[in-house]
Image 1 (cartoon, rainbow, N blue to C red):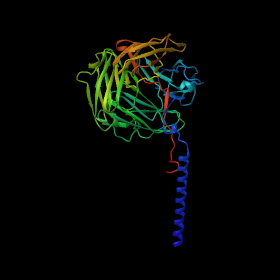
Image 2: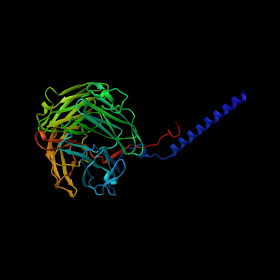
Image 3: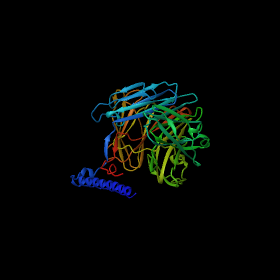
Image 4: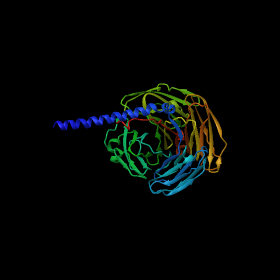
Length: 481
């Protein structure tokens, strides 16, 4: 027994000596190496986007798919391909920068298209899906920005009490399967249920989840909700998500826009003027109530609506906020400042049609793009802080029109009518000029008049032209766990 104990002690002592020797060698190498000042002061690096994927959902209706390639910038070759998601069947290839492309597509089934950009044409690539049905049970003018794949996504809009059908489209454009959890907040609080967890989405496929009509769509617990904040999280993989809403027969169809992540300061641009109900939906994801200060920004200036300047919103709920009295039929934006992170959406009615908006991030130096401006198109620009000058340039398949500089005063909203360089649909570049304050933007598209009038709102976010790479430094974790 003594021999065994001595042997074990020798082995542990040997292992300890080896570890000490390795540490000594690592320390000597570190001390003897000249100091790398760039390593010790490592910073994040901003690089151009070199690859982009956008998913354009298809709800079974005829519609238009449009895109706008970024203006010519970085050197090198690149292209944009449009393919059918399920089988990769090509629809179009666009090789040139600063080009507007559109195609009317007839579809007889639910599917999606994937827009893939590479090289310089990926940096800022945008695409839209628009529907115009002047009559029939699904009458309406609807539009949505083609979605980028992600892992944590928010949507705010009506629940099953206020809408006849709500379909969540989940598309996986990667080679690996994805698993998705869907949860929701309502006006009565969180909808706690295991339904909606672990939804599988196979590679290169679209899964449609009908909210309130299946276990994956949160089941019966959601059927009594008038307002919803839907939270889509990918546990594995990533998905592009879009939501199609059918309010009721002949009462409008629309796509619900993706909301930014919860934040304490939000700006909702593009609140349309004219008659009809205008309502904000404010979700509080956290476990503490939120106190929210509300400011309306019009062409005349910014003001706190009398008697509505502060809203106390309960935790883990969705609270509606009527804007009609504060707006008086004027185009506007709404700024919300909260002591807790919140998410928000906009619901607007006109005639027998409905449209949805949301908060946006400021455009930034690279601006934002709109790709389909048929009918009567109006651009709303809001500068909540400092004054701004925004260059607006229309682009059709034959080239660019003359740029127009639009001045927006501090704390003002300006609305202009867009015009194209030729007939038919066209895209628009919206770029703040150097020295401008933050700018938020939305495009309102309309056709028809009175009770037959149709419209849709498109929030315009900043073009994704660059990504930030985190700093990289040495680590000892490979040597010492």
